[in-house]
Figure 1 (spheres, helix red, strand yellow):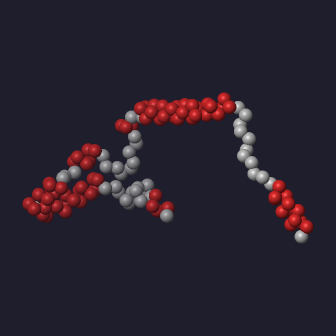
Figure 2 (spheres, rainbow, N blue to C red):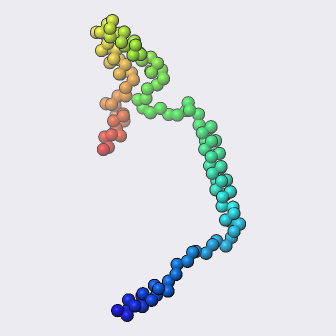
Figure 3 (spheres, helix red, strand yellow):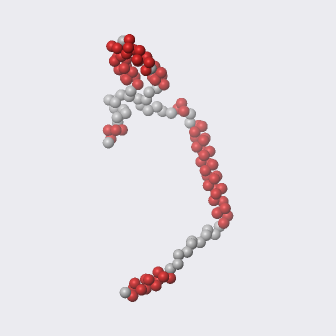
Length: 118
């Protein structure tokens, strides 16, 4: 019981206080401008990196649809006209379009490869 009385008397003497301030006030005054300079330097580095990287040099993922393939694909209007005028040729046209534009899922390293890990 005496141990609890001793602990209680010590806790009664405890008074929380604020930590001491950093003694160098010059550092405190420079803290804002330092962060501003760091942010400006990072923004400048990102801008330079964005300017140096040209959008034409990005690698295309395997099986991606190129602009030429997208332009050569018939439009919805052309497919509708084909379906109305020659319905027998519509299936062949859709099969050709899917072979040209959709990725090959049976190819090793194809689009389903990352999903096979799950």
